[in-house]
Image (cartoon, rainbow, N blue to C red):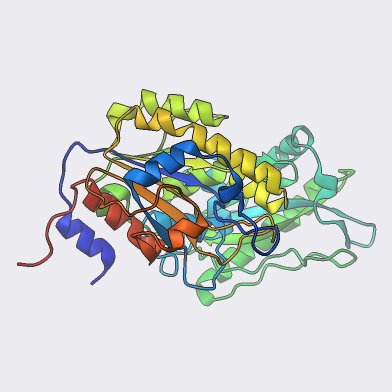
Length: 401
């Protein structure tokens, strides 16, 4: 049986609140054999105190041995099988800046680039042109007109902008035009299937007009198109879990991921402290809260062990503010591991802690990679975490007679 069909059948309504605090890239590794991970090195009194009340284990974001991107990593936590539901980068980028994609739209993540006199790419990112320079240039591309197609062009940051095509018969499977190299010309957009041939033709015409508009720009005299993606057809949190869900995130991409599964993006937050304020202000309006913390991931990708430790301690310090609101279920987890040792997302499972009044605590009194290996939740696929959250919140009925 499809998992969401099951949750629809078993869903029960009550007034319970669920908070899922996602420390992006939470899992780590020791810097040397026998050493401690970032989480084990950090002073985390609140996580350790909650560990004594809760149950922990290790979530597998996609499948054993697979290092996930942020999209699949979060979809798994949200209870959507990341192998079944795939979100293209263009759709992530568009929804991440607040663009409301409609069914049939195709979004493309675009990079300004610099072409030399021969039409070859000399800089794939136009010298990482600053946003204040690039945004007006992106907006100038709104002049482009293609019969039968509605076109949206939105600046993002530095050399990046988003283009969305809206019209009949557009598919999202088109190859990137970025050759991933300099000294060669950009590629033509090529459809990967017959349903996307119209999209490829529209993209060619867009690029033709863009080249003319941009030809006199000193840096951004052309652009590449990457991550062509249609809007994924995904059921919402309300439909599959009966939950009114809110997302409190700083970075656009995670707001985009949350909005694609029907969460409402609430508040404007630049810091974890801001996020706690937004949580408190919206506490009575929602059943489920997704709170995203980015910096355990970015410090890991930088290979900065000490900074990841500090960011983990910062995360720990926000927990009393969440506890003070009295959620029936509190989950602390990550969408994947990002060990500073590897400077990248990795395939390792992710320490996960669940606290509720009926969670059957395991014997651990601290929270880390080592304790989670032998925790009461054992190893489980992340897509089942929402089932555990719902049951611990009293929001799941009995299956079968």
